[in-house]
Structures are given as structure tokens and as C-alpha cells.
Length: 562
Image (cartoon, rainbow, N blue to C red; front, top):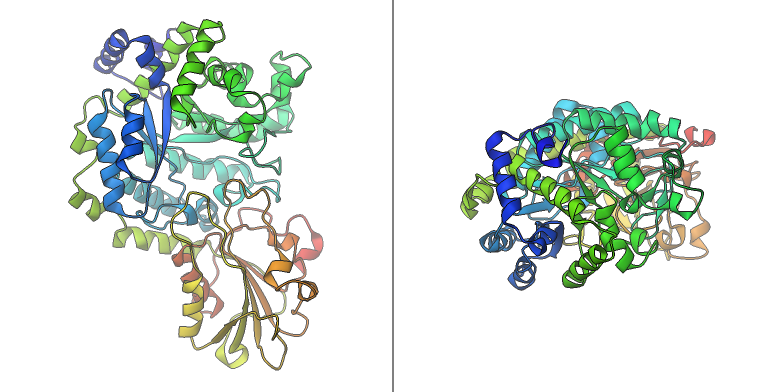
């Protein structure tokens, strides 16, 4: 079956009119124009100059990292649409959590959603994200993350995942895919062939999925089959190797068995398309990442991304240089004209499946006044509050410290080094929601001072606050006792034998690995204000804890339970 005729089948489901549009456009595009359709370029911020520079290349799409003013975000996307010659894919990462743009509602991340354990709430949250995303011009989201959080030392998976339980991941991912695509935004299952067992970050190094073929079938195989059955339109092929399946598919015993999926025809064609039957579009993960750059040189990597089965090439440091390398790959026979034709057919098929060929510019990006009525609404904020509150998980309270009362715990010392930011995030996140909430409840709150450390005569409670969500290039997330306690020798002090102590994580859920003996531990999963405010209510007994841990928060340590 030709790729063009396959567009009538799921997940594209194109009618005859749409297929005629794809076929006609393919016939009119020059080879250069077809090659440009393979590229989705990165835009950071909303300045018109860089956007105009990229749009002059006539790309297949652009990825939007907004600034923090809704007006400027809208104007940047509007300018791109004004310059398009072929309907434009506008992509984004609608993962939510503490790293979303401030021009959109502050929504809890995927791990929060899993901990809330309420698929109706999950559906509401994704539809809220989709409504805001559509209002701001997005038609393709690189979500959901379907990685499995099995390695507690992974700083890139953790809060971006739905946890470690395969059934939970499938249920949440299918809910996300259906809610997003029913709202008119293409979903993406990522990161193929599966992250979460290697502690390293593919942004920094090619990572390896170590599972045997049978283990992979029982985990990621089940997850991706469920996503395909749910009609997910795209898959992101990442800089992650899967040597067991590469071997089974005939890759000889060599370093090529450890090639990242973005460079592996065996994993994209052999496993994803032939073995699992995926008929949608494959997009590479960001090609600027060191998971690709540390594997091979740019001249080899660029044409091989498409030759190995990806239909879309994601991001370029130098867009003209990468186009030249793609052409060089064709001249050298690495990339064939038929492979380019097939990839472009799927790109145009996705655009047609989203109805971009029929929609006016105003339908794809409403007027600014309309956008303001759809973004950061009371309804969406209430959804964020509901998910955040339901997600918060009391992992243990071995000393019966909770609930906190002014009579027993009035003087609170907070030990925290604050939040750590996503490299492309908005204004710094603060812990004001937590601190102000405690003060409003009548507690005296002060920050840790190594010159006056907590002691029974000056403190009634020590509150450790950790606030680092999973994000690229962090490499490791851990309790930095030296930083939190003001250096040596206070880094050696643990106060919980003399003073009631509570530890709350607004992010990474595995801090009991570094503090197994802390008596009271809570996972709140995300730094957003709704989660901070809910934690205050839980701490003081105004609301019960209801979160269901989507991971082993005890980190496999038997003593951490006590």
C-alpha cells in the first residue's frame, strides 16, 4: 500500500477530498519545498524578527516557546500564520506543571494527574489545556509522555511521567490522547522506544533502554499498542537505544545496536511500523540534543533522521545548514527521493487530518479578545485546584505529627533552597503560596539560618521544602544537604529526633532515597500555586489526603517506611 493511500486509514482517516488536496499539493511542491516541509523550527519568545527569518524558509511547522504576555504570544503566532504558504503546523509541549508558559493557566503535571487517580478529572484537565492551546494557535502537542518511571535517579522522567504502573500509564495516556485529539490538537506518544530505566538524560547523552524484547513487550509494547489503538496521530522517536530489539531485527553485533531510535531504521520501520503496525507520523526528538550530537556528527545525523523513518526533523541551530546537509545526504544516496516523498505525504496528511487546509486563519488563531476569554479562566483554575488537591499524597507520618496546629507547632523553620528552573521557563516560581498560607493560618514562619539553627527552644517544627520538577539537563535531582543547611558542618545535622519534622516535595517524588528516616513525608508533585495552597490545607487538617502514589515513593528501601 502506498503512503498516500494509507492516509484513508487510521489515524489520519482522510476522506477523498482531503487525499486529493494532499496529492495535488505534492505535485506542485518543488524538491526544495518538500524538504522544507520536513522541518519544524524552534521559536523562543515572540519577537517578530526571528519568526520572520524562519518563515522565509517555508517550513512545515514551528514550535512555540512563548514569552509570558498573552498579547505578544498571540502576535508572534499571528505573524507566522500571515507568512505561511502551506498551512503551518504549530507545535508545543502541553505537559503543564511548573514549566508551562505564564501566558497559560498553571496546570498540574502528569505525575499529579496520575496521583489524583481520577480519569474524569484527567479528561477535564487535558481539555482545558487543549482549549487554551487551540486559542493560542497550537494544533500539535508533543504529549503525552508515556515513559515509565522505574529508575528513581532519572531527573528527566519523574514528574513528566504517569508513574511506574503500566495500567495507570495506559489509562491516563489514552485519556490524554482522546481528549486532546477530540479538541482538534494532534497528540504525540513520547519518548519512543521508552525512557525511565536509564538514569541519564537523553538531552545530555544517548540513553539506553535495557529491557529484553519480552520485558519491552510487557511494558512499552503494551503502552504503545494502547496508544495506537486509541488513534494517536504521531510518535516522537527519541535519542534512546533499544539494543534487544535491534538485535532481534537483525542489526549486527556492533555499536549500531546502540544507535538512538532517531537514527534507527530497525526501531522505526521494523518495530514501530512493521511489528506494531503504526500508520501515523513519526517526529524526531529535538535534533540539537546531545543524545544525537554525542552519537554522530551533524552531516551524518541530518539525512539519517529522515532515512531512518522519522517524517519530521525537529529543530535546528542553523536551519540553512541543515537543509544543505539534507540535500547532501540525497546526493550521497543516504536519503532517497522516495523516502522524502513518503515523509512529506505524512506531513501533509497530518495537516489535512487536522483540517488545516479548510480552516481560515481566524479559525486557527482567534481574535485576541476571544483568546483572552479562553485562557486562564475561572473554570480552568478550578480544574487545576481540583487535580492538585486530590493528588497530594501523604507517604508516611510515623510520629503522628499531622495535623499541624498553632498550639503545638506555631514556630516553623523552613529549610529550602527554593525552586530550580526549566531553562526555557517563565518568571521564577516562588513558594509564596505555602509560606503565606501558613502565616495566614497563624503560624510564625522563618527561613533556616545557619547562625541560628533550629532547636527545641526556638522552633516547634522543621519543614523541609523541596521544589524541583523534572526538566531537561538537570542530570540529577537530590537533596543537597550542603546547600540547604548552609554548608559544613550544618549539612550533617538532622533535626527530626529533637523537633517534629515534615518534608514536602513539590516535584521529584523520590526524596526518601536521601532521607529515609524523615518521619513525615508528603509528595505534592508540582510547584504551581494551587498545589502549594492545597498542601497548607492538608497540613492543617482542613482537608484529608487523597493522593494515590503512582510510584514507589519509598524508593525500594524497606527502612524508609518507618
